[in-house]
Length: 163
Image (cartoon, rainbow, N blue to C red; front, side, top):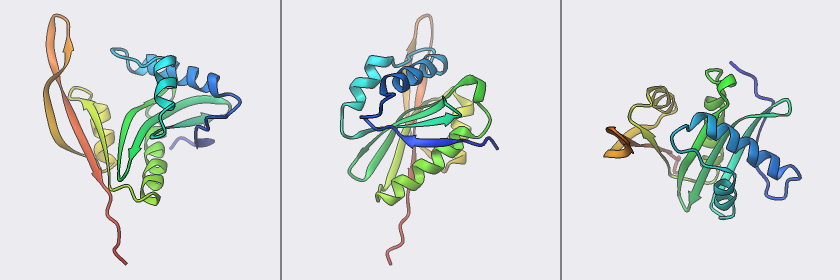
């Protein structure tokens, strides 16, 4: 298991805010080759009160991130990514563990995300984290000169004790 030095919520007034956003945008470009969100898109999203960003630090390098939205009792992962040099080392699983704890502490009832139906490694990770497919959007991802790819909507439902 990969040891993460720090996973933290990005604070809007952080001194290194611009560098952090640029590092996230750089990882996004590497892991979301078809439709990466750039620096400006991430900045605009973070201007919304409901959008949060957790970043994973290893020493002083950002190696992963999770951009998510919480609206009332529902959360949605908008983007999650790990730098290619650090993939398959348990980083995303640890991000999910921290996110799940935070969402449960805030009484969020369910977590949603969307994934390409051909992204088998991501689907396997999400299933390990307790998410299940609840819907398929046929032909959602259009590709020039190639067949469209379905989008899978996955959900994790949090169970709270009534005591």
